[in-house]
Amino acid sequence: MLSDALYVQQSLINNLFYLKTLHKFCLNIQLSFFQNNESYIEVAEGMAKRYEELREKLIPIANNRLPKEIIESDSFVTNYSLDCELLTEKLFGIDINTNLTTEEMNLEPGNDENISQELLDQIHQLNEDAIELTRNFIDFCKYLLDNMKQSNIFSYLYPLIYTYMIEEASLYANDLYRIQQRDSADPTFVVNYEYWFSTSMKQACQFIIGLSDPEQTSIITNADNYRKIFAEQMKRYKEGNITPEIQQLLNEESIEQLQGFISFLTKIIEGILDQTYYFIIAPIFFDNLLTEAYYFLYLLKGTSYGIQ
Image (spheres, rainbow, N blue to C red):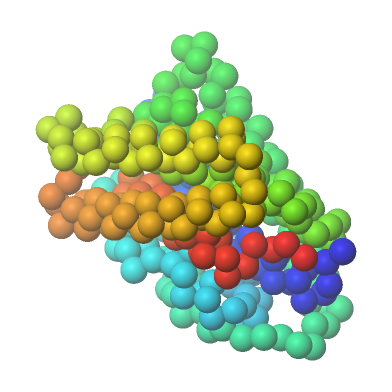
């Protein structure tokens, strides 16, 4: 059973990572439709605003309450987040509350040893609101995906991207539900999470390939090479007899591979910002991929797996 301290810490970490991620997902959906699908644009925009509202409540609570390692891991915000948001605003004519990103960049670490009932109540309600909103988001994505497959609507996002967003949101909602029940993570959490994130990184490579200008051959080739690497890691996690020794070896290999992939993603984002590369998706999408890669790296390094 989670102590008050772990309940607060796990809630804050999950929400800081996923509320920003899902907020950007909503913006990507909003920007993927033509004006003849105004109703879907409005739903996505409304959900984005609700995720912003939850972030506005969360960030002040999180300040001075999280370990230095997670704050400095770039899991919540990167050096490119603000520039990607500003470029997205410029390209698509939308408003993003960049003040929230600035506030996340200025989060200070700390350890709150005196956890009040008021704080626990605040976090409990925020978790409940996040679970409800995220389940609505999942239903919305499933509805859009089904209608895309039936040729009832057109979106500039691939069906696989919708599947990816559904899987991300489901992981978030399920883990928040576990935290709300004060349940400790299952001992298989580490292996399962590493397999899940390897899958996510493989999908990220597929997105890069599909969203690239065909003339960006070096980007496409590198993305495909990393796709093969992550696919092989998935196979080893799924089919192997995961002893502690094998787990340690896979962990070390994954760290090295992921660090290379992060450098690759960083190069892509820098190329987008300096007009070297062109992709048919909003720049915020790539910053989402980068924060996810950093969060995976944070977990792989074992700073905190949440197993208590």
